[in-house]
Structure formats: C-alpha cells, structure tokens
Amino acid sequence: MVPAARTAVRLLLGAAMVGAGLLHLTTQRQEFRAQVPDWFPVDPDLTVLASGVVEIVLGAAFVALPGRRRLVGALLAAFFVVVFPGNVAQYVEGTDAFGLDTDRARLVRLFFQPLLVLLALYGGGWFRRTRRR
Image (cartoon, rainbow, N blue to C red; front, side, top):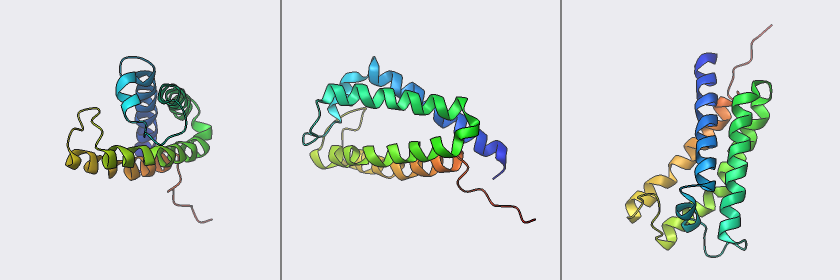
C-alpha cells in the first residue's frame, strides 16, 4: 500500500485508541471492568483505569508523533498482545460485555486482536519495502 494508506491507518487507529481510553475512564468503565479476568492479580477498577491511560497515551502518540511511529506502533502492538489474555478469559469464562453475549460472538472477537497487532505494525511502518540504491 502507499504511504497515504499507512498514514490513514496510523491516524485512525490512534484516534480509536484515544476514544477507547476515554471510555475506560468514563461511561464504559463498568463494561471494561467486567472484562478483567478473575485470576488477574490487580484490582479490576485500577486495571481499567491504568489501561485506559495507556490507550490514551499510545493513541495520542501515534497521531501526534509521526517521527516516532515505528516505536509507538511496536508499543501499541505489544499492548494488544498483553491484553489478549483478557479477551481469551472473556471467552473461556463466558463473560458478557459490550454486547458479546454468546460464545460465538466472544470467539469471533478473538480473531480481531491479531488484526489490531498487524494494523499497529503497519501504521508504524514496519512492513515498508526498502528501496534499493
């Protein structure tokens, strides 16, 4: 794809992360708490607040720091990997949140997390072809 598409992915994903982070801290806080696995050793509310702040920081950096897009894209991809066990736990434990009220819906959601990892890396410029001299 062309650099414009990569930039669009970076900007859209960054804005979506800021939006999701704000929802962690405000109106969807209860829904996000429901997704914190029972086995996670940190208070669910603290986990939601901290992850929301991380999402806002990473999303804003992805948008505002194009010169650091590779670093931020890698950090964002790593964040998506780190929170993936929570998505698996939501499926395994059968937790309803965000309209995911069937095992099938929760299972389908699991396949979107690798896509988010790829989008973060792509938006960060990790899949660019190098030019020959």
